[in-house]
Image (cartoon, rainbow, N blue to C red; front, side, top):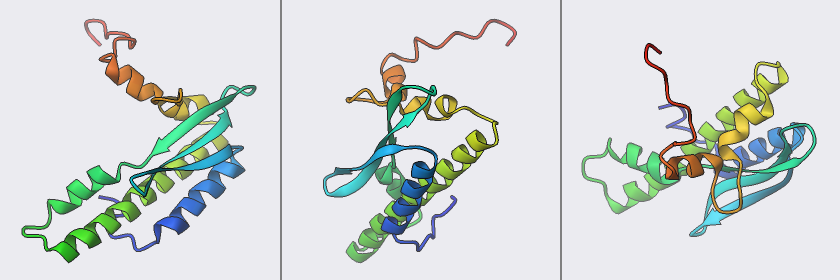
Length: 147
């Protein structure tokens, strides 16, 4: 797993993500917390060139923690605490890498902002991806035979 040994503090990583997003034209960057832990960055971005669209980029720290825990046979309390901290650093570093690559693709005209951020468009309750998933992806076209 990439960044699984990152020692970069989460707040420094978040700052780099915010700076990259701001340079790309993001506004209203907000930190979302769940149970006292930073869980997502929300912001607005002109995805179609005219209107501002709300975006929510989550970092699934809990899932990273589960993956890291698989390497530990009998975790002690202190080990579990360190793994939880490492999971946060890893999850946010992965998000930083993803954001930087996506913004580079946009900058180099390899992708459009809407193409990149569409799964993370936020309607106030859920992301576009979550909405598709809740509906068993029924809005997606079915592949024809031979594809």
